[in-house]
Length: 350
Ligand code: PMP
Image (cartoon, rainbow, N blue to C red; front, side):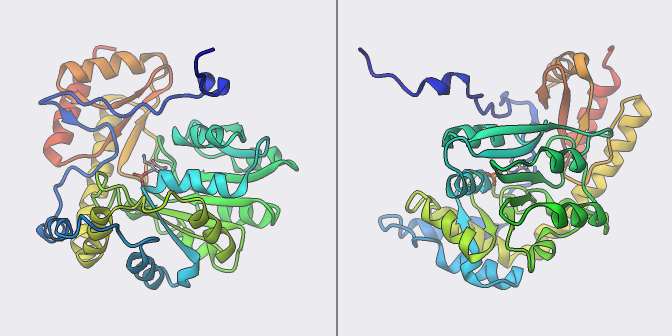
């Protein structure tokens, strides 16, 4: 008998990354289109001199820095190899086989994968009208096996965001032995003051964890670093299941340096958010339905026309993220890149 991998892996979805096409405009992966400031490049280059040594286990300096910024105790912070690793570590820390992980579908593609890796069971709740989280249906779906609920706010891939009153009401009703993970990968692009800061909601609630990442607003997608703020119990579990040294020396240096130039990076986010609103209006003028977005992307719920629109844009050398049969997610790039996307959208015959 040849060696066989676990039989259930055959049914596990692959994480399909955005397509890379040489010479094309890349609006597929919710990255920031602007290169890093020199201070970050220099910090990474400096870190290279110590590459023969392992990095700090647990990224202590970054933990302390994040704790100070977010106003929590360092025992409540865990750093991970991208927030996607922290998604998996949270499931590993909380769930054993057959425990349930609840999340909206469609939402972030990694949620079903990290759930299945651990042998837990995914329990999905369809989106509500307006391409939004259905919090009422999520509450109804909770049962005695539910251990963890992922709430992406804003929601990837639709960009819609939950407001303070509805999210507080939801958190008040979730049983205290179920962890709600507020995945705020796109938090820095939020412009509506009524979209709550998860860190504030988590204060005083031991069953709320918040995920943030350096991949999006901080422009460090290539370095793979994110953080989790949670109760000391949950953060400790997340650290415990981490692969030792998985946050490498370059990622650590880049993240710390990015916090030193935060003002510059946040100014860039404001430009991207303004572009998002402009692009949305232009797409609506062309005739597309576009839900209001609070992230650095917009969603075109094209249904059966999604694949045709995506291919049309690829022909115009603009690469987007297509979820065939459902919609196309368009990352907001530089104004020039956005114009190229809009030009392609204007000539879509469908
Ligand atoms: N959460 C959400 C909602 C995301 O969209 C993404 C990235 N696409 C992540 C987490 C993971 O980001 P990273 O691993 O780069 O921090």
